[in-house]
Image (cartoon, rainbow, N blue to C red):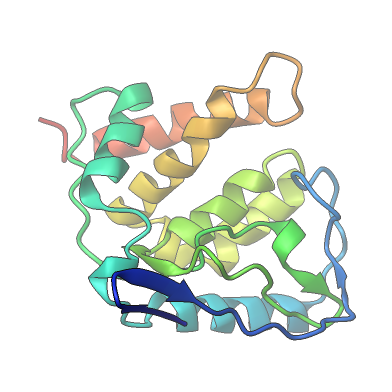
Length: 192
């Protein structure tokens, strides 16, 4: 909760003890953790709920300018990066913020508004070192990752991985994925 009074900004966070273990303790996913179909179905429903949440603009975490700047810094300026669908954004989606075997989404302090699909794309990008999980993300989150905006969200999520040093487990898969996303964006005929 956030409010302003007498020239000050106040914030209060409600916390709840979660005893489930996170899918990974930190970092990026490197192996398939063997998550159940039930878990994946719950994640799909949860992320859909987040994405379809109306969030007031003052809580915007990713705006059009930042989205465009991040993508064009790596993919060039010839791609139309206009966001067509805005919604709720967890803002720090990763396997370290998800629990299993019972699903709980953790770490909500970055919740706000953003392009629909960024959370889905972040999970996909963070799983590229575990190809079976990355493929599962592409299947489960297909409505969010295969559209033109989905490709843009995937490009947005790849940018920090492409800055990793050579030898990092995600660097080579991210480069390969970036080539595929870039080609798909060109094929979508939204290139200037």
